[in-house]
Length: 126
Image (cartoon, rainbow, N blue to C red; front, side, top):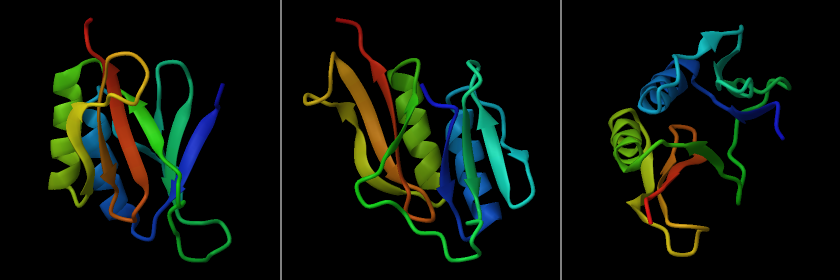
C-alpha cells in the first residue's frame, strides 16, 4: 500500500545510529546515504527514510503519528526496544502483549532521538 514513510531529524548521525541499531535487530540492512537523508529498504520494496526537512526548518514529530515495523517474533521486539534505549531513544511502551491490538499482538513503542514515535509488533502463537 505504501511506497515509503519518512520522518524528520535535526541530527543525521544520531538518527542513523538509532535506526541502524533498532532496524538491524529486525534484519534490515543499515540505511544508505541519500544526501540530507538516508533510507532503509524492505524486502517488498517499500522504504523508510529519515532526513532533514526539505524546507530548511527544524524537524518536529507528528502528534498522534506512529510508524510501525514488523518483527518476526517476541525476541526481535525485545531486542528492538533494548537497541533503541541504548541508542538515544526513550520508552513509550515497554515490550508486552497489547490486548487492544488485533490478534495476539506483542509490541513495544519508542520515541527516537527527535521525538518521532515508532513501534514494532509481532503476532504470538495462539
